[in-house]
Length: 148
Image 1 (cartoon, rainbow, N blue to C red):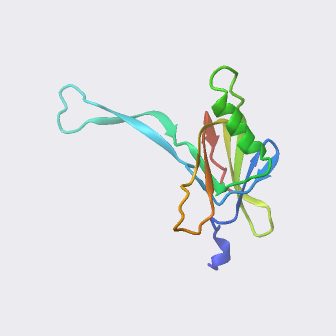
Image 2: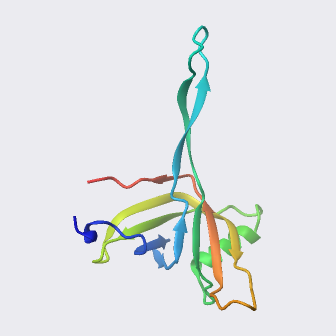
Image 3: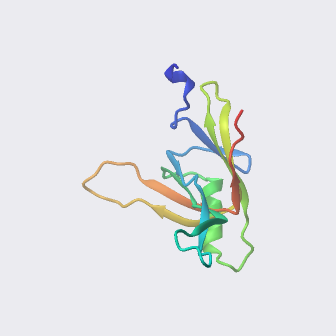
């Protein structure tokens, strides 16, 4: 098979509230099934490993610090600074892996997401790097794309 038949990880987009946001890195697209080990009376050779709840990691978004008005950064600011005095405004966030024709190849939608952490990279006088802002989102669940 030609290399063009395989998706590339660098061509993706993130949409939030109908707006696209550019990021250099998205991580945390993980779902895991937990298990519980059960010992059965009289059977000492093994334990039954039974499925329990599935769990996910937080969605981590990284990009160069955006100094202009960003709705995503504003959402993080209000959620984190207002504390629990106000209702947390959740949003659906979609990450799409793109084809070369700017069409989505696969999309993951994170339902009822909300910011839980915001950080900015360290400032160092001995390095010439971009300042990176990191946003971490918790969510209720996400959908794995359907295969064709």
